[in-house]
Image: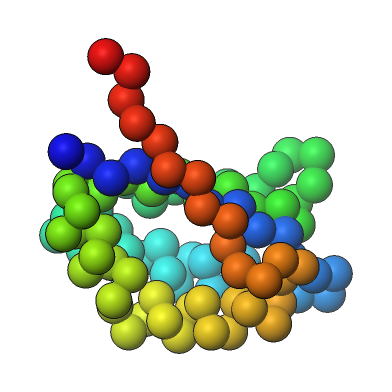
Length: 97
C-alpha cells in the first residue's frame, strides 16, 4: 500500500531564496528514488513563505528509504534554522475506498 502524506512549513522572512534553492535540489534527488511516485512542492499563492509538499511513496519501505537518505538529512538539518516551526508538519493520508 502506498504511503501518502503532505508536509508543511513556513519559511522565516529573509530565507525565501535559500529554501527555494534547497527545495529544487531536494526535489531532483527525491524524484530519482526508485520508490518515489510523486514529490510535488508548492508555495501557497496567498503567502509564498508557506510551503506545501505532496508526497507519494510506493510503500512503507520506500518511505523509510526516503527518510534515511543522506541528502534528506542535510536538507532537514539546514531547514530547521530557516523555518518558523520546529520541523516540517507531516499529515498522513489514506485513500477513500
